[in-house]
Image (cartoon, rainbow, N blue to C red; front, side, top):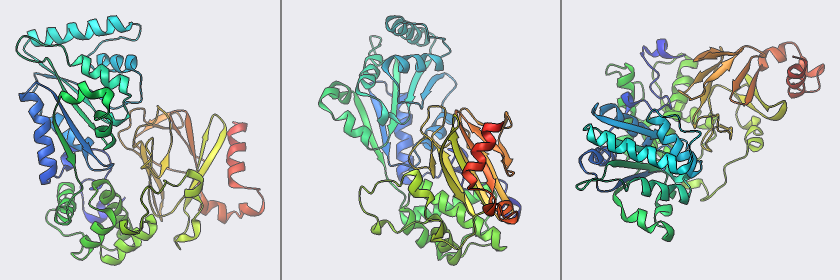
Length: 417
C-alpha cells in the first residue's frame, strides 16, 4: 500500500466509520448535538437523516464513543426484519437470549429491563441505523417500546437514523402517533466546497500528514465538483487519486492525477447525470472494459452454491463489496455487511481487506483482516465465494487459446474440489 510512500500512519480515506477521522462541519456538529440531547431530554425521538455516504454512521460511532458509562446502549444496524426479530435484536444487545420467547414474553422482559435500569440510575438508549428500511409495523413497535415511563419521564431514549425516505415513512398517516413523538428532526446535508477542502486535510492530518499538503490546491475544486461534497464519494476519489500518485512515484496528488482517478472510476459530473437514473446491474457494470487504457490486473468470479453469478474486472484502484446498492459489487445477503470488504489493485497485485464487517472474510477457511490475493484464491463471504483470477498469469500462459473461458475454468475447478 501507499502508507510508506506518503509517510502516513493510517489509510486516510477508508470507508469504514472510524470516529477518529470524523470531521465536524457545522451540520455534523449540529446533528451530533441533537443526538446528545437524547441524554438530557427523554420526551421523544431524535431523527437524523442524510443521503447515502453523508456520514451518519460515523457520526453515530463518534457519539457512542463519548457517552457516559452509566448509559446502556442498544445499536441496531440490520433493519430488514420483522417486529418479532426487531424485539429479539434489541434484547440480544442487552444481554438476553430471547430467541424462544413469544411476543408477550419479549415485551415483558424488555419492560422489566427498563424498570430495573431506571431503578439502578442508568439510562437506556436505543439507536437504529438504516431506519428507513423498517417496516411500518416495526416502527409502530418502536413507538410502543417508548411508552414505558415513570411518573416524571420516559425511560427509553431513541435515535432513528436513516436515508431521506425515513422522513417519508414517518409522515405517513398510519404512523401519525409516532411522528407526534419526534422531538427533533435534522437532515445531514453534503459538505460545502470549503468544508470539502477542510475535510480532506483533516483526514490526512489524522492519518499522519503532519501539515504536509498531499493534494495540490487546484485539485479541491475538481474533487468537490465530482463528489458534490458527499464524504463517502470524497473518500473514494481521494483514495483512488493517492493510489494513482503512488503508482507513478509522485508524492503529491496534482490535478492530472485527480482527473485520471475520475476516469478510472468512470464518473461524470453530477450536472450530467439524469435524475432517477437506475444503478447499473452487475452484468452492465462488468461490460465496459474498453473505457480506459489501464490494463486488467485480475478478475473476481462471484459464485454461490456452485452457481456462477458474474465477474468483475480489476484495474488499478479499489472495488468496494457489500450489501447495499452504493457498492461496486453488491451482494444481497443477510450475511454480508453494508460495506463488507474492499479489493485494492495496483501494478504489484491485488489485496482484499475487511472493512470491519460482522461476519468477516475467509481465505482457505481462515478469517483474515487483510490478504494479498494469489491466482485461484477463493474468498468466502457468507454463502458467496469470490475466486481471484490473476489476469497477468493467464495472459503469460496464453490460456485464452487453450481454455473456453476463465469463468468455465474457475467453476470447473470448484466442482473438482
